[in-house]
Image 1 (cartoon, chains in turn blue, orange):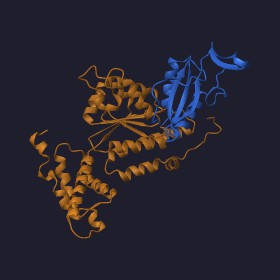
Image 2 (cartoon, chains in turn cyan, brown; image 1 turned 90 degrees about the vertical axis):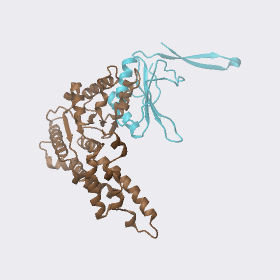
Image 3 (cartoon, one colour; image 1 turned 180 degrees about the horizontal axis):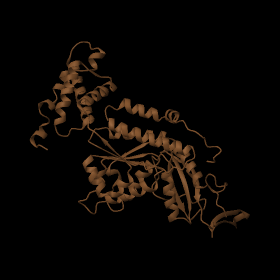
Image 4 (cartoon, one colour; image 1 turned 45 degrees about the horizontal axis):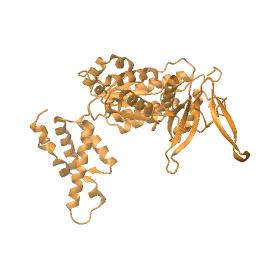
Amino acid sequence: MRITQGCFSFLPDLDDVQISQQVEYCLENEWAIGIEYTDDPHPRNTYWNMWGNPMFDLRDPKGVMMELDDCRKSHGDSYIRIVAFDDERGVESVKMSFIVNRPAEEPQIHMQRTDFVDRAQKYAWDVRA
Amino acid sequence: MDDASAPQTVDLAKEYETSGVAEVLRELDEELIGLAPVKQRIRETAALLLVDKARRDLGLEVETPTLHMSFTGNPGTGKTTVAMKMAGLLHRLGYVRKGHLVNVTRDDLVGQYIGHTAPKTKEVLKKAMGGVLFIDEAYYLYRPDNERDYGQEAIEILLQVMENNRDDLVVIMAGYADRMDKFFSANPGFRSRIAHHIEFPDYTDGELSKIAEAMLEQQHYHFDDAGRQAMADYIHHRRKQPHFANARSIRNALDRARLRAANRVFQTEGALDAIALSTITEADIRISRVFKGGLDVDQRSPS
């Protein structure tokens, strides 16, 4: 099942040129770029593994693309996303995040419905192969 | 590009003006005093790149030329300043995408312990992507006396990126001529990857005097006639003393002269006008230790 989270996830996957252009946009806004990967795409899993430190002071997307290539080499079968962090006062958080790599076989997100007291229902989701 | 849309002719002179190259070269001529051979080389390089660009626009096959350079010359001969102009030039010609200059030395590239160097060098390279990486005193990267030195690791990464990312960044290495020669002979990989070796000559006394005037003008100061003569004498004496660093020595001398001038006007009584506040006189310069044979330290231990 195709995981949809972050920007552009309902579009076809971005190719490297398009990723590069998006990164360029982020750099123009002076956001710091981080690369993160995970094998657990559950929507509640906010904390993905960092690939190196976030990159401050870059001027050109090529630097990010080099890191992304390295990350793909090591974690080609994981989800990889690019996050853009805005350090402006009062914002200080991630302003943009998009998936740039998916495993060949994406896992299912399965919903489990459970009966509870007084016919109430509880929902839970888990990621299954 | 398909042939139909490609222009059939190209006007080099027009290209020269519109690309902004003319402007950079003009700036170079006006702002930098002396350095004739350097300017000549840059003009030649610019011509080559402009022709290459024109060929590309006409649809002729062009391979990205190797643009890595080495600047050799004594301290204070304007290597960094020229590198900055070079970055602007390459940007206007479209050979680097952003045209910024990242200025580093050994400390920024080489780590302190095993596994520290590669990330550090890569970090710098990432920042330099799309621009010019200026490595000052590049020969420090290689230390032949210590075979475990991490400099070698940085050199290998640099060489790899210089070869594979020729479209993405230009590396300029700078340093004293003799030590750079040793560095290149110990690392033949660099010599073959650097196409342009540009030598920076020392400034003559006359040029240094002009530089001094220009520096003062920028700070809205000026010499009076005796002060100008004193400065010329100063340059003449300073050159013979150790640690002479061309334009940088002049800048330092002027900073000290301004300090003395400030002290002098502070002690005069009564009203002062703008001219009095911005004139460097003979006394401000003649008091320098250079006229008494240099710094005490240097006299005790001649080096």
